Length: 113
Length: 112
Image (cartoon, rainbow over all chains, first blue to last red; front, side, top):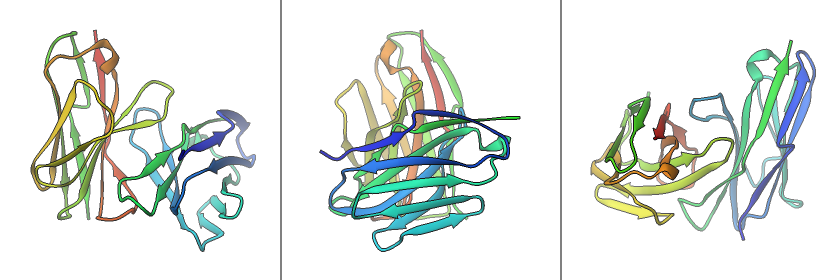
């Protein structure tokens, strides 16, 4: 069964600290993996997208890694800011279907001053 | 550049009333279109997707329906709303293929 699991479910950190969010998946055949940021009451916005051959990709203070062998991805946030408070969603798509986007339930991050 | 619009932004409807949510995309042609629902504190659930005008696929059986009367217009409807239909409804588009999805601002629906 295609699944995407994220951990932790929620996380509270102090402004300026780093944090790492995890995503494990059992999607096959794998096409690509995306990380989205969703502010409360808004639509998700893409942070990174990685294909099978990519191990790491950065977008400013956000760095995503992908280990296709262990089927794990992480999103590292450096020097967190109050505006990083949001839900972070991992989405994996399968090659066999254009419409096979499997969503994780997200990690809710809160950054405190 | 491409943009995606959804309206209304918020909606409060009584149980048993009809529903119509609209989504339009600008700046692209022949996009894949999607409707998702997100319950409070939960992940996104795919409701419908469309690869072209009049072509609708349903992922979850329910009292909702979708239509695509024009290439860049996607409508979510219901004849009679249930309490369980409350949630945050998101429309998204992508180019053909398993590529990145772009989400609209969402509609917050509360069924009372």
